[in-house]
Length: 117
Image (cartoon, rainbow, N blue to C red; front, side):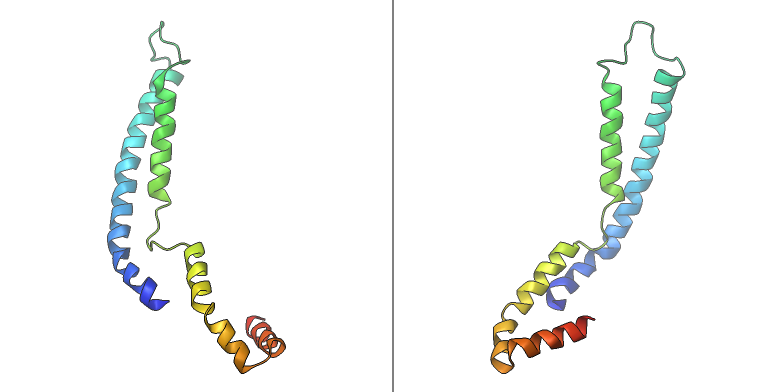
């Protein structure tokens, strides 16, 4: 497992730096956009003939929020729990039949339960 996951740790510092930079840049952009949106739609800055219905401003605000969320949830290690689980299963799958030839299933299960609990 270490041979598979350890090389991915090399990208950690670069991903951390990219995440910090992205949060700063998207945060600044979001702050400016929200201020302008607030001034236009909540503080009466919109022209009288412009309707909020059909305006692209709200969709743009939602898109910006989604973009910020992608950066905010970025992982520093590009491995998920699901991936780790699959690697563990792939590692253990060939070992189980071998272990069953060395000890009975009941004894193997008791040992595993003892280790887990």
